[in-house]
Length: 365
Ligand code: IPM
Ligand code: MG
Image (cartoon, rainbow, N blue to C red; front, side, top):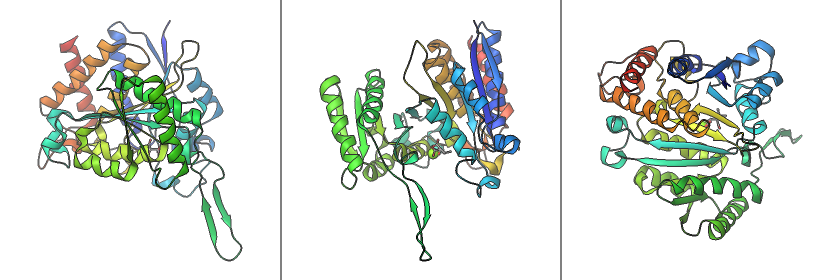
């Protein structure tokens, strides 16, 4: 039976980078895999078509699919509409309704790109860290939220940072499970010095460690210090586990260490049930409206996200490795999209990058 992928290209550069992933999927199908794809609308594209950033019908397809591959959402034209219908709401609903509580954001510095980082080569060379971000809780979803009128010419904006024990336990477990096949070190990050939710986070992480993973290492760090340490000595980290908002911020910092946001994939995973793992794969970069439609976007983050799908959803580890190797070889050859080029280096288009990766796959197969 075919493996069903739902492709949600979204807005901005989303469709351009997804087009390259579709070529990679076709390549795997030509070489013995059996992926069936369906493409649907999300974000601003969905809003323009039916006034919602994701329809109920698309949500049903996402839940039924074996994996969702997501592009990007958002753009200036949708800045002034309500939060419920904004492009980002489509992504947040996918995360919430699919139960994708664990967001894996690896920050790996490809040797060939160490000079594209804003940090010195020796700080980032060989960098391989993994941020596990809680994705369905915290201030992103906490109630109460909203803007109320105080009646005295003032308004009040409210969001709520809230975590229950089980939400912390399950994401901390994911971090330890992933650390097992890495360097067995987990850094739990919160702000218990000012936030009760951070204090609970720290206590629960400590308990999960003591009861289930005592043979591994758990350390704690305050989120502001972690931001600083990430640009000071990033290689000190193995796995970082943190809440939704801190994870959002820290993963953008980590991403930049590797040279470009255009290189970073992510996986959002839920709890496996009846042999089915809810999963969505997306590049960490956004919709990049400034370069959208120009064929300049780097498709590697989205292609590597599909690689994470091969690894986590389909247990096609060898194929995932091969895809990574193909990308490394292409980088080795000197081919660069604008985001990873330095100075006056020549730049290639989105589809030329796709061509080169496919050509490399043909050599490696
Ligand atoms: C991310 C993005 C999203 C987030 C936006 C698009 C809602 O920044 O995935 O990091 O804040 O989670
Ligand atoms: Mg973000």
